[in-house]
Length: 136
Image (spheres, rainbow, N blue to C red):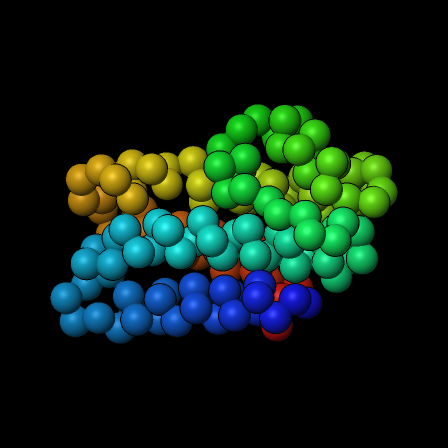
């Protein structure tokens, strides 16, 4: 895995840990959580593709892609990989998770306060994605 993505994932995990331990509550980290999770899902998907040795050199994924329909995201990612996207067995499940994490991102990042349950759900989805990409 590229060192940059590893550091990003560590930073995201740090922010999640800080938010969960904060006596003021997780909501005081709402915007940082939203931004961190977006950054983290990109790093996880790039790491997944790197581990399969299919990500083209210098290729970068944009977090906003994950709000699109799965077919559109797959087309965008197809341009960044060296094999047909259909060869990636886990990609559909991973993209489903990224959509669930990213779909309310702007409301969480730029809108009013959301219920703590929403933030916990997004964090849990991130951990599920992390587990599926087999990031240690």
